Image 1 (cartoon, rainbow, N blue to C red):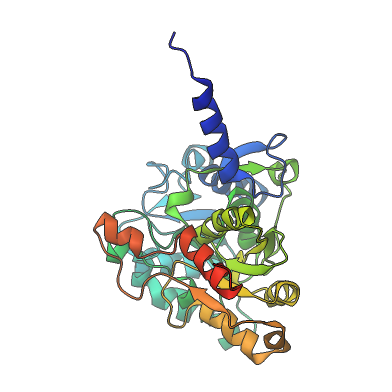
Image 2 (cartoon, rainbow, N blue to C red):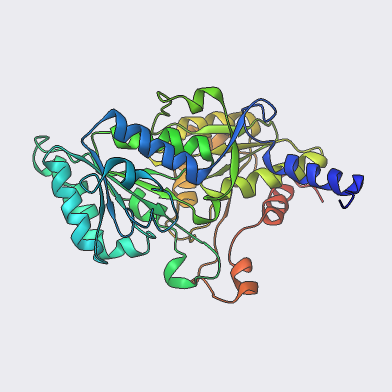
Length: 360
């Protein structure tokens, strides 16, 4: 049997700790779970709890889902509750919306939210507006879920972040989770919610493991929609992010800490409603703000946050103008080198923080 060098073990341990030490749970005492399994667990528990819940979409049943999020659910619940559809997003989205209006609780899966553009009329005009247009008589308890934003090597038509698109629309709730606890607790909340919820996952994070506390492993674990989480406390600068950009921010915060800068990292979790109070409370403490996202800059989530800061007393808490870090304002390139240059990385966050704090 080949020997393992102590240096190799130390390097592996160092990489693991550096990557995961941001969770509020204690890694040594917590179970690790992938984002994929957390989503699967949430779906399973809610389908057991409420027989009105069903899943509909392309390859969700016999194939166990394009990303295996629905693995095992068709075998457990059968054809009537896990339904494969043709490649017709507008069609099966309309079926799901109608079922929700009739009293069921559908979970409508898209292989990617880029394909949900085919169903945008059903999501916005049918699901999002009917409660208002019916004077509150018809609600639409539906979840639209699937991978959103940049993946890897899938080019412009499969890499777009739709967070700002859906967050723009009254009538929808929009969730953009980061880790496994986010995904489980918020998906359960979304399924139970009386309104349409757009649930934006990240393909790159599906296979990543995160610590799960005993509380998060329980069947009654539900997180509130519209409440952000301080992933890492700090006193010098506030970094606000959602989805995979949270990890970018946490890695940057680790590097900044080695330079004596303690950054407070806020995981938004929900984009609509947006937890502005948590942001302003942090800015009042740090007096500096950076927003980080993988979406485009114009009319983005960061633009909304900075605009709200300008419109409130929080503006007077800033010692320097706030900074947005976003994806580059261009369709996503296919070439690997250009793709990596099109998204914010920890180095970008570090340099922005040093600029705001006037540190070389």
